Image 1 (cartoon, rainbow, N blue to C red):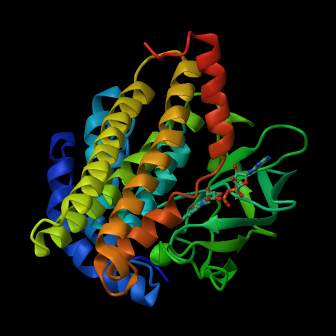
Image 2 (image 1 turned 30 degrees about the horizontal axis):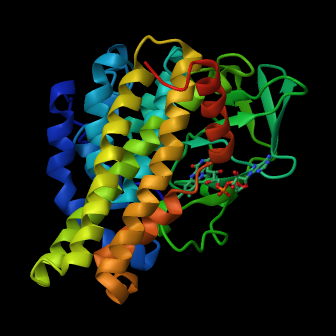
Length: 372
Ligand SMILES: Cc1cc2nc3c(=O)[nH]c(=O)nc-3n(C[C@H](O)[C@H](O)[C@H](O)COP(=O)(O)OP(=O)(O)OC[C@H]3O[C@@H](n4cnc5c(N)ncnc54)[C@H](O)[C@@H]3O)c2cc1C
C-alpha cells in the first residue's frame, strides 16, 4: 500500500513543529483503534504528518526543511514532536521515527537528500531497514553502482516506503548505507502477525537483483554503526515510547477516576506507576540533550545505553501497575488501554538491550560509577 499523496506539504518553522504535532494528536489517536483492528498501514495519519510539514521539517534548510533532528538546537523540539506522535499512536510514532532516522543518516549526502526530498514531496516517508537474519543483505560492485542480493526482516512501512535506507554488507568491511528504490512486489507482510504495533507494516523485503546507483549510496562502509550516531540515536525511540507511557498513564488515571480514585492499594500502585513515568521522562530528556550535544562519543553511547535499559524497566513497572489496577478490562479490545499496552509491550523489544546495559556498566566501572 502506498501513502496517500497530498502535495500539500506546508513549510514549517522549527518552533511550530510541536504545535503541529499537538494539532494532529486527537485525529491520529481517534483512528488508532481502526488501524490496530485492521492491522492496516496508517495512510491517513502519514498524510496528516505530510500535510502539516512534519516530513519535510526533517530536511536541512538547503532542501527546504528546518533541520528537525539534526543537532542540539532541535533536540527538545524533536523530543516533544516524537513524544506527541507516540502519545497519539505508537504505530505512527514508530514510522515517523524511522523517517527522522533515515534523514539524519543521509544528512551529509546531498544526492541522497535530494532523493529523499522527492519522496517527501510525494507524501511518502522513508525508514531505516537494518535488521536481518542469516545471510542478510549483500552488495556486489558493478559499473556505476551496486547489485543487491538477500533480504531484510522487520522492515516497518514495507509496501509504503519506497526509498528506505538499508545497510548492505560488502565483503569483510562494515555495511554500506544506500537508498534502493523498492516496489511493493518485493514485500512479504504475511510474517507480521504481532500482538501490538499491528499497523506498522513490519514485513520482510527481498532485494535480490536490485541495482543501486552510486548516487544513492551514503558515506563509507561502517558509517552506520559510527559512534555516537548509532547507539546515541536510540534516544529517539525512547521519546516515542515515552509518548506511549503518557497515554497509558492518562488512561490509567481515567479508569481510577471512574472508581472514585480507587482504594489505598490501587493508589499505591498508581504512585509507583507515576514515579516510573516521571523517572522515564527525565531520563529521556537528559539522554536526548546529551546525545544531540557535543560530548565525548563513548560517554553519549553509555548514557543512552543506560537510559534504554532503565526505560525498559520503568515502562514494564508502569505497565504492570496499570494492568493490576485496571484489571481484565486492560486486556480487552477495543479498549484504547488494551491497545496502548500491547503496542508498548511489543515496541519495547529493541535490539541489543542486554549488550547496551553491559556497555553502560563498562563505562560506569571506568568512571567511578556515576555520570557527571
Ligand atoms: C514494531 C517494530 C518495528 C520494527 N521496525 C524495524 C525497522 O523498520 N527496521 C529495522 O531494522 N528493525 C526494526 N525492528 C526490529 C528491531 O530493530 C529489532 O531487530 C528487534 O526488535 C529485536 O527484537 P528481539 O527481541 O527479537 O531482539 P533480539 O536481538 O533477537 O534479542 C532477543 C534476546 O536475545 C538476546 N541476544 C541477542 N543477541 C545476543 C547475543 N549475541 N548473545 C546473547 N544474547 C543475545 C537479547 O539481549 C534479547 O534478550 C522493529 C521492531 C519492532 C518491535
